[in-house]
Length: 396
Image (tube, rainbow, N blue to C red; front, side, top):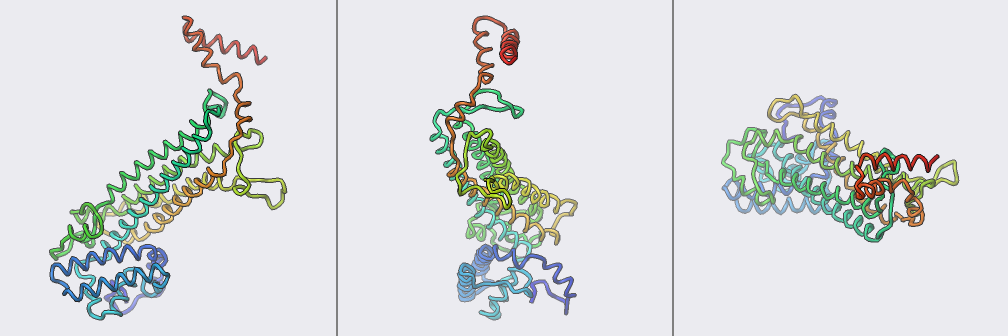
């Protein structure tokens, strides 16, 4: 049985193509689909569309599905097409005609959008928590570094004196900015789309405030077309937040790859963080950092997919939107993994203080020397040329 089926049969190739990856992807959405359905069932019961006994039996059955899913005992069969169908089939098998009533006043469109938004809320909260831990690890590293100096670079050439604490502190602060972006996005998605139907509402007086409250949403998306048109757009915003996190970690990883280069040697990586070569016995490669660096570009691919899919579509739901689930989930999983791995890298990053002290060569003090001349009354431009000339003479 398919929720949409009103014809005798469907070409098997067409069926397989239109189903796509939904049976696999929807497994992750099952708990959230059940939460949304529980809220919908309780609302239908409060309005008299379900009896008290029907409401109670449906809620118990939906909680049972959540328990089975948590223990790996709930599955979406290939002929069920998606998670919504699998859940409804389970309810009908257990409760007969009562299970058939669960879809009253609801479309698969607002059902999946609701499950996705609940999923996104949980996942973004998890990312925020992981970021908090990573920022804390970076700040602890900075404290441990004390006043160890470090050259600052522009154009990949030594520029001015800096410190290890300031270097890693800059990334910690950038991740703090990213965390604020996530909080802003959480506010945007904290609105219930349930009850918007296929984008034009439902000809039934639903209590959308009740379902929103039961699911933990702070608001309702009152305009049903707005709810449907937000799919893909708000997911693009989520992936953009993820890309900002990975951009900051991309730069940080690139720094460490450079600064752990043996010829530079400002930092080292503990043995359990590096990998070897299949042909060169001496190699200790920073593969983990290279993959952190590359993950930003991978995420950009998911974000581009997400932004492209809703483009040129008229208002309302289109099957194109089915394809937004995969880049969203892959992007969120990738971001979670990169944050966790980055935290592990910090634990294995070793400061080579002697090498850093040695790197604080004379040219790094050029600006300070120019300022000292300015303090004597010399115009800055003259001081600049004087120090530049002295530096060239010392070099030659």
